[in-house]
Structure formats: C-alpha cells, structure tokens
Amino acid sequence: MKRWIARILLAVVALAALIYAGDWVVFRARKGPMGVIQVNQLLATPLKGNKMEYDFMGVVPVNCSRSIFPQNGNPACWWVERHKMQWE
Image 1 (cartoon, rainbow, N blue to C red):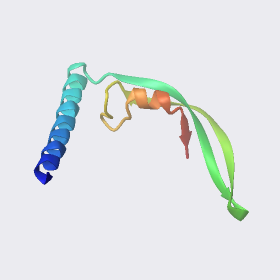
Image 2 (cartoon, helix red, strand yellow; image 1 turned 60 degrees about the vertical axis):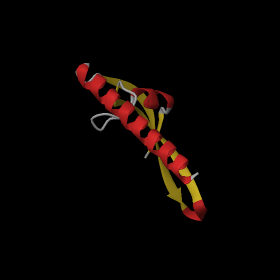
Image 3 (cartoon, rainbow, N blue to C red; image 1 turned 180 degrees about the vertical axis):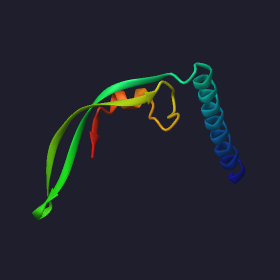
Image 4 (cartoon, rainbow, N blue to C red; image 1 turned 45 degrees about the vertical axis):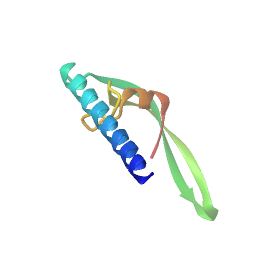
C-alpha cells in the first residue's frame, strides 16, 4: 500500500513539473506576453480595541504574465483578474 501511495505522489509531482516546464516553454516562445489589469487597492489599519479601519487607496495597474503559472516575478493574469482587491 505504501508503494502505491509513493508512486501516485511521485506521478503527481512529475506531472506538475512537466506542466510547469511546458508553461515556461510556451511563455518564452511567445516572447514573454505580459498584460496589465486594473485592481482596487485597500489599506487595513489596526485601531485600538482590536478594530480595523479600511481605506480605499485607489485603482492601480498591476503587471501580469499571460500564462498558467506566475512567470518573471509577476502573477498570472487569470489569477489577478479573479482577485481584483489588493490589501496593503
């Protein structure tokens, strides 16, 4: 039983590595396609009595990579598109 679990775990890790490598190759072949998405930036400030104050900082552009996984230190555009609220 332990061998099966180890084999399944190894297969999952190998598959994830293969998908990431393929994503990286496609990203490089397309010459690093980047995008810019507008996100809302909020500031959370702690107050006395375990209370929080939330301030709207404005709308800021965020650079993102058009890929499945984050590339070049930028998040994937599909992730930023689904998480348009950014907390500071």
